[in-house]
Length: 302
Image (cartoon, rainbow, N blue to C red; front, side, top):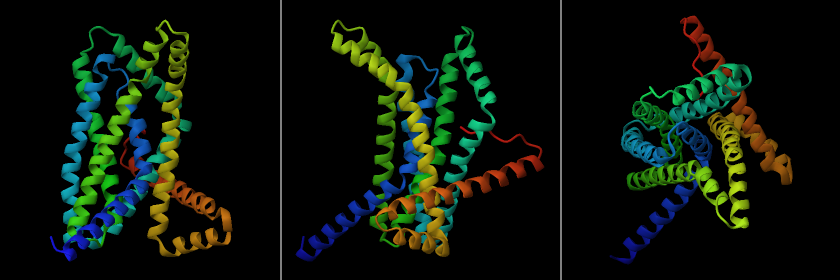
């Protein structure tokens, strides 16, 4: 390898590392929601089947990304003008999901409680086919993962737009693998927290028992935190994408941030969140109106 080729290779490696880190940061909103959602998908599965279910969904997620990455590369190669609109759609969808979750929580809580009660009753029924239930859970989780994976790939594509093919391929593939391993590795750990806590709480050591009780207390709160943090991040990331895609709005927010001095980062973050909330409200309102006009009941937030 010549010195020139070596320098080009090193420069490309640096570009890939920087772009991968930037893409991972931008997809944080999807990651938070992905963690909470996939951990919730395992609810109702017997303890000895939790990891196999997570593994099955992880394999489905890899298949989803194996479809989405080539599609993203084709769009970049043959329709680069579509990258920004797709990114805006992805950002709007993040805002929509975040606002829909809030609306569902505050406006449809009785329905959610009824659904949970029905699920528990079904699991307690000895006549219920648990294998079929597990299969349905995996299929539903993989379908949801396709949407979340599409958001991740769209955001990453926006980051590497304008780069050469091999850089785009490397970054997109790297993000696809990192996100899949990271999300489902953490989901596997989260769903086993209660088992770990129970195991430790039954040990003879008082220290182990105390740690076990602490884990058992922490596990449900961790799930709630992931859900709240994921929703907040969806507004931040989605709102940031929308604001960046509207030059006048982007410059306005940047002006506010620069004028705020040392707390400019906070002003920008709050402004992006506000844009995300407003965008989410508009999209949810539009979708609800369309569903009513078509005579369909609005879909419940996942």
